[in-house]
Length: 356
Image (tube, rainbow, N blue to C red):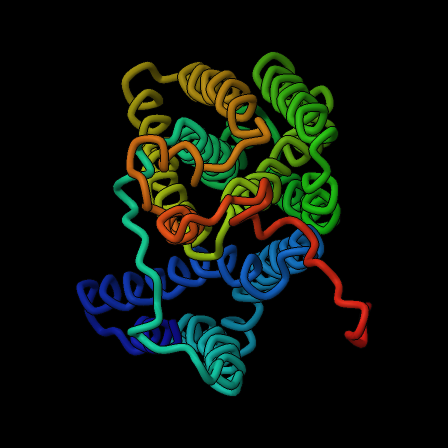
């Protein structure tokens, strides 16, 4: 990410700028995919708090960059080169993050040979994994349409450019406290479907309000859509909850986010195509409201209290580390305890241990 951001700021030609963008985005994609698995490995009983912390940090970083990049460019003197400083400055936080990770000591008994590989393709056998992938993709599509088209739609509806920008900023700001709270609520099984229902209702009301009365209460519509966008924090938490092991969480995170962002990327493109063909924004609202319907169905499946490991194991025995552990116990003639392989259960405490 550091190298990509630096390359973007030094680019003299568009192909170089594009290469730097791809490199920087690859770094961001790797971080997005890795974090759920790291949380599962190191903080399995604190998933809600940790996911809330880092999703809030992501939102704060995005808001800070959006708000301050133009002032940074202007502070350089308003020269034609100001944009370079506005880009390269964000390489510094990326470099700092790299230093922090490099300072974390490696576990003494971890190596390439001890790593347990999980075949991601086998996740197609898990309805829950496919539902989480659809859920992730459709919720990201909503966000991409908001970021890419809502301000222009509000301007075309009669609001000033400044007001449209403030409303988009309001949408981002409202999402920050929600990012901190929603993961801690999502880890409670009884709250998952009520949360989902609330998000769907907020989306439908917000989008319908923007469609039918964009200038009547635009701040309310943008706030309601921001509440619906809490599905981002929810699905990040579900990725960790629906797999038994860190390896499976990483596989699920990779598949759901990779294909999910492919789904999401089609949203702004389709809105633009339909806008050009029809000359109206009706297509945008058809797309996002259809997405909300898909999100509600996928979310209902994703909130079932099951593990993707178990679903895949029925078709591909020994696929997950938990399944391979079960195979070893069975081959040794050992009766499998009911909780074998479930790392979500609290560990048994030894009476002689400091904690016990």
